[in-house]
Image 1 (cartoon, helix red, strand yellow):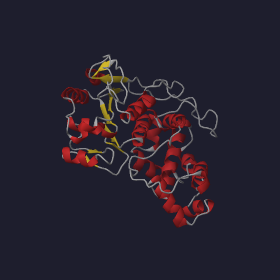
Image 2 (cartoon, rainbow, N blue to C red):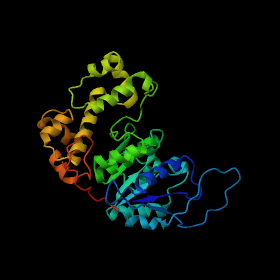
Image 3 (tube, one colour):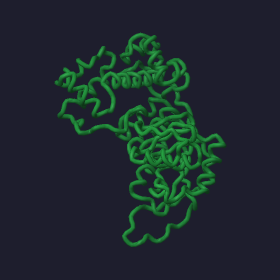
Image 4 (cartoon, helix red, strand yellow):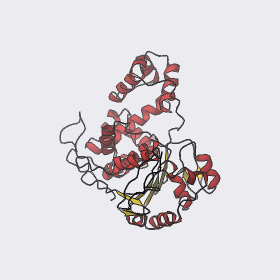
Length: 347
C-alpha cells in the first residue's frame, strides 16, 4: 500500500485524519488476524527532506516520508488522502509530477483509492473519467464542475468501481479502508479489526452521506440496546413490529429513528446484519449453506444464495473458497473450519 502525501511539510490538522486513518488500518501489523498484512509506504515529493521552519502562528504537522512519488508505481494499491483546499477550488493544480506517477501506477496495474478530496488528484490524472466516484458532499459540486467526465455521486459513503475506489470524507474514509480489508482478507478479519478500532464493522457504500443525527443513538433512548439484541438473535424471524415493541416505540417511530441514525430502513438494516453474519460463518466454519441460512436468519439456502449473490457479487460457495478465517467464531463448533488460514493480501 503506497500513500501519496501532498504538502508533507505543512500538513493541515484536518487532512491529518485521513492520513492517520490509512496508517492505522494498513500500517500496523496484525499477525494474529492474518499471516500476511499490508506493507505501507508513505510517498512524498521530496522523501526524507527536513521540514522548513514553521511560520509564526502556523498550524499543522510535518512528516518525513521514506519514499518519493516515483515509488507509487511499485505498489499494488495506491491511496491518495486529502489534497489541499487550493487543489479543490482550482486555485492550485495537483502537482504534474504526482499526476504522472498516478497514471504510471494505474498502467502498472495498481488499485487506485482516494479518501475524501483525494478524488481530485485521481480526477486530475484522468483515472476517474467515465467512472462513478464520490468525495465529501461539500466538495462534490466542485468535483463535478471541474471534471465533467466523472459521474459524481454525492449521496454515498464510498464507491467501489473495481480497481478504482473513492470515498466521502472523515468517517466514510475509514469505512472504505475497512471495505478494502474485507475485500482482501474477508469479513471475519475486517470485523475483528473494526472491533479493535471500536467502529462499526460494516457500513455499505451505498448508505447515504446525509444521516440525520438529530435523534441521538444513546443507551437511554431504547434504540442501541435493541439493535444489539437483534444482532445477537438474527436466527429469529424478526420483524419491524418485534423490534419496535422491544424498543417500546411505535413501529412508525422506530422506523423513523433507525432511518435517521443509520440512513437505512429497518428491513434493510436487518438484511445487512444477516449477510454480514453469513459471511463470517462461511469464513469461520464448515457449516452447510442450509445451516448458515438458518443461523443468519436468511432462511433457506435458496434465499441465502439469492441475497448473498446480489449483495456480494459471488455465490456463498465461491465466497467460501476465496476466504477462510484462522479461528472459528464464538458459539460455533470446535474444529468446524477453525484451522483454515486467511488468504494473503496485496503488498
